[in-house]
Image 1 (spheres, chains in turn brown, purple, yellow):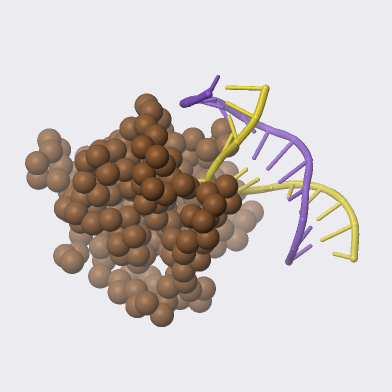
Image 2 (image 1 turned 180 degrees about the vertical axis):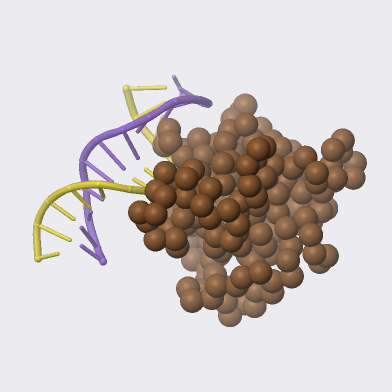
Length: 214
DNA sequence: CAGTAGATGCTCT
DNA sequence: GAGCATCTACTGT
């Protein structure tokens, strides 16, 4: 895979399982207008496998204004509000009509640490390794909001302004290799209601102690 | 440490 | 009106 912002084909031509695993070690970055670049290395993700997956918002073909983004062609953001407080970021994957996504749950902070602290409202109070851990925390640190729902997060030649210059939220490859022995697999968080799907190992995270930088 | 209550707002029934 | 793909602070060891 080339370095730089990922291309839409990667998201649109792979399933959530493949993309989830591959996103570990990539950089999730935000360039919110008028602010400094913020973000870091993706360290934790979950795959949501769509219509058959009881933990998915698209289970059994469920479809509404809220989750409409999931049904679009991969390579855009699916952002929704959880517990009335937290914005959750998924990357939509697979072809149009196949509603799969990858939830971003954790980052190793790299860029714009002070801005991220400011957005979190913790300044110098909390230790840095909690700055972008957890799906609600990282969206807050990166300035990701509901207005980003449905927006492109990668390059797409077929789309107007798909050259990456206008992206506020995007994913980059910096050539960080994540070997299988660096990855922990476990059940997903907060989906106990999903019966047998609650136990499937669809959560992937970097082993503690491995902190790839640059 | 582990366990839990409360905050909070929108969608769907 | 219920129920959420959560987080923090507070309790009790």
